[in-house]
Length: 179
Image (cartoon, rainbow, N blue to C red; front, side, top):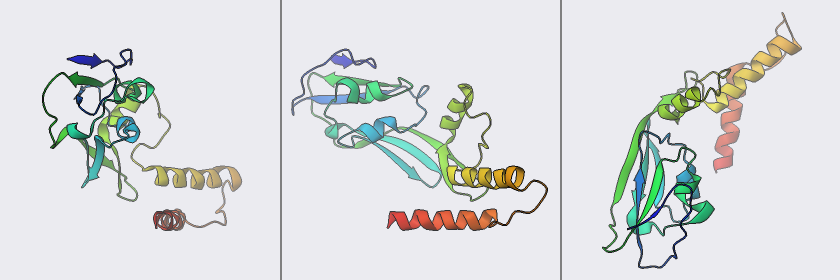
């Protein structure tokens, strides 16, 4: 069995007959989505559904990318190891590698990030000034409203739309972009 570690040192040749396996260290993985976003064949796929985020792997789709595009190299937590199997057929079923509950925004009630990702950010000492229970859209809206209150019109009610109106308008724009 040939192995590509997360430093990407080994550069095996790719052929259509090769079978690859992804091994995930669930203690390190934060479901950051770097691997699934870079995977050219969607062999690694991130799914969000009903407040749960999961990472799936489909062995028959994996082509064993090497170098800087390898999932093992791109993973910031170094949680992925990519193995090349010497013999055997690739399995066609999709396997769930990890799943985690997502955090729900306390303002709009949308699920926005896996809780292990937030824990990782806190452990690294990042995001200490951020309202962690708000989704990015509500967080930005809240910051704008606070800025207007504190800087532009201290002690007065500024002439601007309420936070809810700003949020509705931003959501409307977001829905229009999707269409």
